[in-house]
Length: 198
Image 1 (cartoon, rainbow, N blue to C red):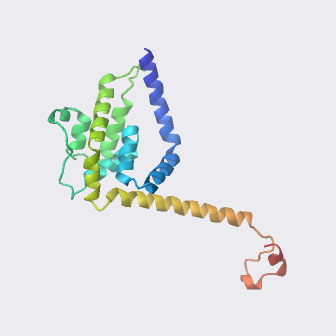
Image 2 (cartoon, rainbow, N blue to C red):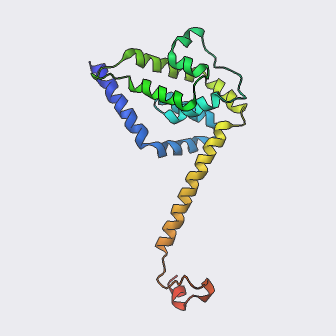
Image 3 (cartoon, rainbow, N blue to C red):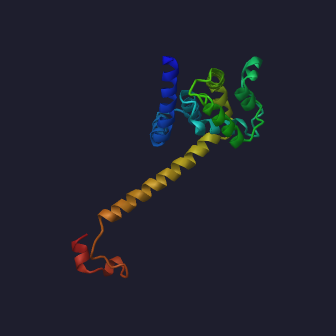
């Protein structure tokens, strides 16, 4: 009973952590990148460390399904009995459908009575282990697809940096607001009081 309780608490904390720390994860990724770690390694590690990191799984699957990637994951045939591994391995699912399916499976870890559904827990554990064991494969795929994930994450970084810059400019303008500024005049035509209070 204690194990069941601890797993349930751990699951709830994981969900809360995921919701509250998106920005910290972004900063962590930037630090890892600055230390020379490749993006695919970051995304792979993010998912392996937190199986509810659906964004990381989405990028892994999206990259794996790339048309110019004729290769398949390296795994034993018996692993294909796991429905998550099977679904992922054959690249047969639409990306959003696969993520929705995965989220539904994760949600079934605890049944309606609040008890742990061990077969589901084991499905997810084996799936995460398979992703972990194929780290080198994902790096190889990333290298063969014109740095697919790198392009994606750079777009996100640029958007976030633009938002931060806009915020800084807005804050600066607010702090430096000058009551003597006349919007109808150019800077060289402003009243001397404007320059005295600049």
